[in-house]
Length: 202
Image (cartoon, rainbow, N blue to C red):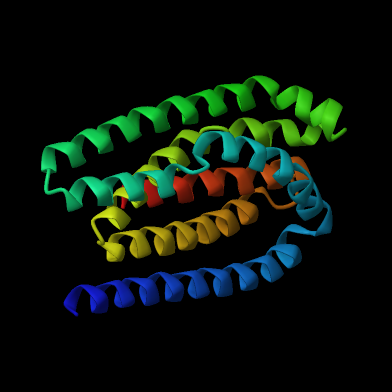
């Protein structure tokens, strides 16, 4: 009964976190269009699909796989096995994340000029590339904490990541305002990196 109550509480906590992040994210997008302008937001939306391709390469499936393997190892009562799974997952995350980072860094010019047809997105691609290994590592840590059913850590990480991303992005937009859409979306990219860094730090 106690285990069932804990799982129900964890599920509700993650659901509430998701609702909160979506709500502030919705409000942020409205504000973003007003302060950054439609041209900068259009450029950002144009580069997001390409960036998400590298996100998938860096971290797809890591959280789910880590959660399952950690939970199985924990159920068998072997702390040593849990530690081994975690260390292996970290190494895999680093491999995927750094590979995705290197590929995006090397292909940023090609994506900006040949795929998107707008070289103003090059700087944003270069700036956002380091978020990929951070994201991969965060995926493993969140999978670990989900596997040991410590959802408060996961929830705190997701909320603070979103808050820092929004706050830093708006601050950087204010700093780069009237300096052109290229620098504005570079600020958006930098805010994303800062958000990932804080999420991992938690």
